[in-house]
Length: 212
Image 1 (tube, rainbow, N blue to C red):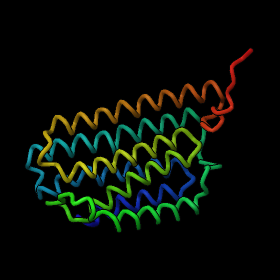
Image 2 (tube, rainbow, N blue to C red; image 1 turned 90 degrees about the horizontal axis):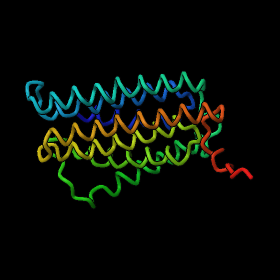
Image 3 (cartoon, rainbow, N blue to C red; image 1 turned 90 degrees about the vertical axis):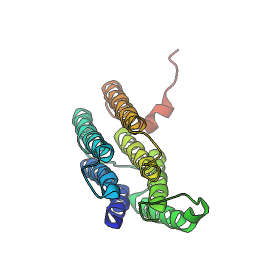
């Protein structure tokens, strides 16, 4: 199970260091696929109805539907790269490393239960949430900010795995549906921003002024 959690962390770092939006979306899809496997790994069986339904729902939404929707948005916006991020790619990787060190050095203070998952899941969840938030504030393209939001939510999903036995399936599936609706709304916003301004650089929105 440790290799799954390690893979989730590595995909976040690949996204941090990549300017190619296609690669970033693929990494988000891979991260979603790895996350969807965790519930079945915890129960050590695909026969458990709870974990099986959660796997199907998470995989369908995180690894298939949302990436397909993002690829469509990318095609409509006609962009391929995050050309001028607010924080450079090299500094982003350094920042991601600092976030990872902070997560691993402070996670014991939370005292959260991890069984049946390894203790690695708590710092991995913390690092994933913070890296997602870092992407939200350090990138200018709306699609990359949506990717940051997805990574942040994946970190929250990781946290939720530690409480898997306490939350009913309906709540977990409700969270996934909320995520799906949120990404659809963001995709619509990306389309309208691009249609109106011929680009989706959100930093330009600060220059808007009322017409006189």
